[in-house]
Image (cartoon, rainbow, N blue to C red; front, side, top):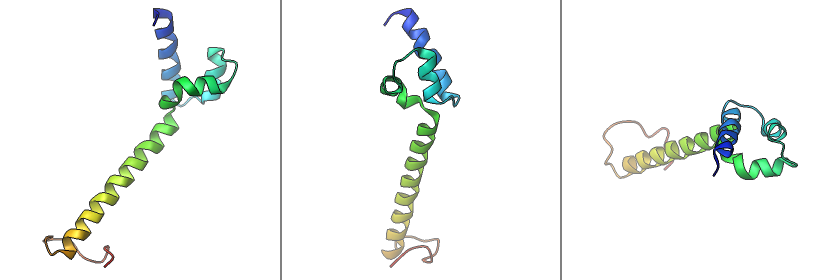
Length: 87
């Protein structure tokens, strides 16, 4: 990768991380289609990152809750209540 391309990439990524819509970044980069921009920069779209983090967080909470409920059912859990656990 050439130095000018690194500056271009940094520019695009910083814009996306600060919430600039990918359609606007595509125009600024001079791409003929937003699909080209999406192909290269989709991982840095802030809304996408926020959604991915929320999905991971929700998954971890669900797994933790399921593990706690399993422990309650197995009488290995010494605290908490059964109210939030299905039988």
